[in-house]
Length: 316
Length: 274
View 1 (cartoon, rainbow over the protein chains, first blue to last red):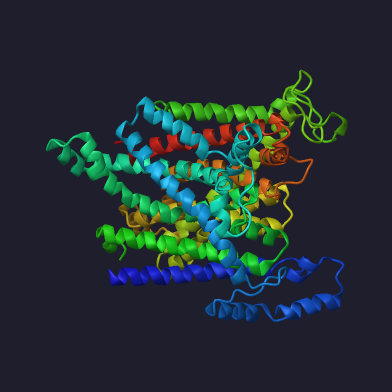
View 2 (cartoon, one colour):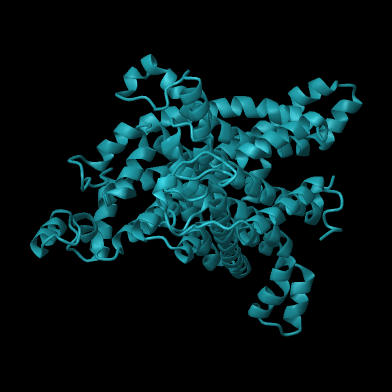
């Protein structure tokens, strides 16, 4: 087990390094470099040189990269080109806001998708199963922003029940503006449910044909008991893995939802930074998101290995 | 093809829907003539009428005609990106899986690293660096889509390379390139085809998301995503014909490709037939 854990952690460290290299390279090999990109074609040579000097861009690229890595060691992600703040501080401010959105949506999605998956597996190839499959298929195939747009049209502009924008102000005030959370959370939750239940249905169908199910049935256990005592716990395992693997998709969804609802989270921060070519922020956010993904995958794998001893041996 | 889909209603519906959407986008303009080049502000945002069956958009383009032209871009980009991504991913995965050892580890950590950055974040960075045209859009979408096929094909190659027929080729003097190209790749065609079908669906959604973020192809070119994202500005105006038709077109097409993919997966993957 120790060998497996150490190996997986080492792999994850390498993956994070790859991410840093990729994102760093993307932002450094711009036509004209970041200074030109930010200050525009009309900036004088001296202005550009000053800018490059301030942010260390006059150094050779390998030196810049080593500097950046050294900064990472001190949890220093550099300073924003546009705002007078460090990237670490900006992320510290915006990340919790995104986590609220993602946390509530994902929790809702899990709680709703598992019973749907169970019902579909239990009643597979019946009208109930096909009905759910059809509806979820449509949500799965919808552009996220269109789904949000329809929800805004119906619940905000036609019925006037809910505001069309996300919450504003600090996290502490969200309790008093819960109604602004409903549409963004619903949008993200619906696409996540569609993503999850496709997998959960097949995971549960796979559990249903296992020998232990036949044994339990042969011993006289009711279908209800088999579903809740045998199939559900076994497919929770695949739900854990699924959660770990879905982190990047949920982040992508959050990016769109935040942009559509003007929800002040990390997605919006990233999008505004990308548009204004504020590259330290772009790299910082991409890095944090990737880190979350890698850690999520690692935790999912480890949880799986603890729950199912066979994995450790296959891993060798 | 007919035999493949004999037992799959969903797959047949999907196949028919894909055919209809392709015919609608590429043959439609031959029957329904509209000007999709010149704007006509004086006839902007008109509701549907016999003259404009689905109304006009905010600069006066006929929406139905625009759906056809936009469909061409969406389908072209989707299919081309999927083909490039699957071909590249297939080669990457087959080489990594066949080589094994350090090369395999290095190649797959690159894939892991890229997978860890959410696709949309990479797309946004790429999109802000490069001004998109259709060929560039195809490359950008392909650049983030080859990772899944690479992983799938590597896993299959790992199990294939120890089989007897690979040993046999080697004994007969076949080189590595011959083994990979002539013996491994033909055996993973099933996985590749199924994955490519899903890739088309994902690519169409990716293009739509990019357009929403303002990184689509610039006008007068159109795609379904950019039509939808300009509809965002009219949520409160009640111009439903700017919000629903393009979205419905995307959903029908994506559902269709997903249905075909599911049916193909069931037909080609024996394990799923319990």
